[in-house]
Image (cartoon, rainbow, N blue to C red; front, side, top):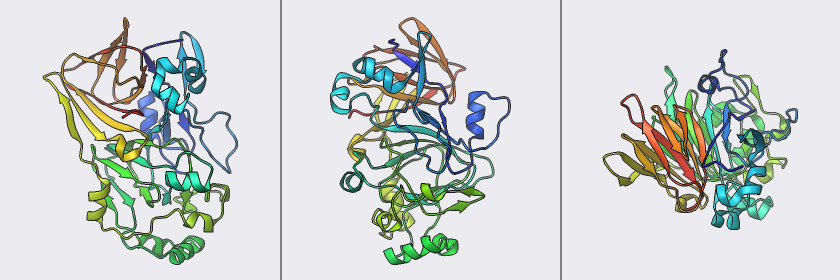
Length: 360
């Protein structure tokens, strides 16, 4: 039941917004359309929470096939955790990946929302995790401007925000924000408590603390209804109002605070590795980008698993005699104790891999 590289099958999850046509295309479906499964959860050990929707057993949990046997990842990690996740990780986190990563394809602007900080979740929600997030923008659909809401530019008071949410006064809500432009390759950090909304037409890798805690501020948008059970995490509005950061920040201030500046941490004639987001900023995970121009041997990390997504190019991974073709949208997990992987880019173009890990 051990494999140095786990190829990850699609793991589509229902949400209260529309999207996913690009995920259909990545999967090679014959009929592609936006729908109610706009997210693919990667190597997830975090169950999805969809209050108000019909229950789907084990929704959100990743599944893999190893040596012909289909397993949920928590079960695989429970059996071979040290091999896949590493000894230190198992001691620290147990058989959980330690973060949640998704490929997200938005066909509409998402509902304005916020997530609790880790401190708030631990103090008030009996949860070890809040939901700090990171966005790596992979693409923007043609004809869409590409933007996000992030933080209050024109901040309401707590009482004003309560009134806006209770009345669902969208003009007043919209007036609290200025759309912030984003571009392919951008990396954005969204701290817990910061109100936000992804714009329409974005394809991104989203990495976050391993929870599904969200306060939704818009109960209907573009025909997508958020049922009452899914609005306030099973609590009431007064409880949720304490989650929001009511600080007013200009677009320039938000860019300075939340737009990450990648920097190169290693390079050669064959590769370049960039740190996109350091673990010290998240206390949970780091995110990196590997650009491979010529055949390159990828050494295992410091006793940890790597969750990887191919974001540009085509190539082949060679691991313990297996040749694994990869292309845009391919996703895989490398085992902590699985040894080095030989990477061969193809078609004369670089192969670009974004990856994340829970260790420093």
